Length: 427
Image 1 (cartoon, rainbow, N blue to C red):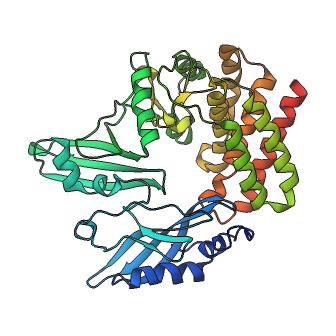
Image 2 (cartoon, helix red, strand yellow):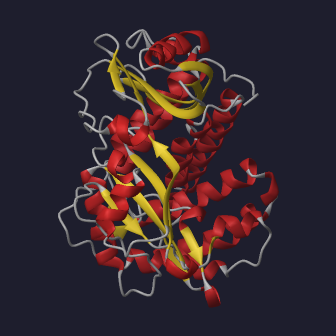
Image 3 (cartoon, rainbow, N blue to C red):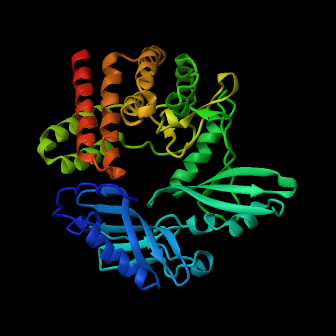
């Protein structure tokens, strides 16, 4: 728990209370009062994640140690301030009985909301999905000797990932993973698996459990992620196998009525955040974001895309069989953007994972020409898309509240601008 506090972002005149979320003293007052009114004493608090759109909303998630009547416990707490507050879902009536904390959400003024996991203002199914007895009863599984739930990842108001450990009679153990999603992302997950099934890609078919809204349940996919193989210096699949995987996805038409993700609006929003975080570079960042938005807006959505494809989403099984996970961003889109996102993530992995050394960069150098060839793309086509993806990745060090986020964000912005300039020269 002892780590340097991250630097504060610049003041936001259109969202004045955002600064309070990043100041340890102010955050401790807001969250300490929340806990005190529920019979807990705040002992330790650390900000671990931020979802911030300047002038609109800011959510910070905290890791907290608190003392109750009988013992200490760790809690995941969130605080949100928004210029246009929206109504929050009511918590289940039995939340306290299940999780030992009453009233998991509290509005502190018109523009400030505090809550504790596993409540979420948007994810209605999260409390049920995080409660082992409820999931076990809904699953229809034979009564196991033990059933446990472990939270793995949580992005406030967007998604939560959980692991279920099922121990049956005779010591038989099963591992399942659950994802709690908003309705649109849940539909995309099931639609994408139906679209890609039978195309030579290993997938873990999602299941739904009766009465558990917003939850998709998966069995583990065979193999190890390409990210693990790169970092652990293990044997890697041929880059041609990875290129073939991307080409196979892009060959599948998207047949449902899903709406494509508006990449032009998304990159403008990202540019706005980066310009706010790095005000001395704001003009340059906003100009680059505008150029990328214009380029992205001119691309018509096409076949199926993964939507967030990178080395951690690709699994390598026996005989280098290729599989995919996390299809909740899938839909009709731009296959070259999937490829560019993969390449941009490999560049970032080399810098952010010391154990990976130069392997991701070398692998990227082998993979890139195969993607260009297979997708019929020019150097300029790929370069500006890599720039767009790198600009989005530039928010990462701030999102996880790294103690060195200003320099790390700026380094990724520099990389995005270099890629954009390379695309302009190539064109």
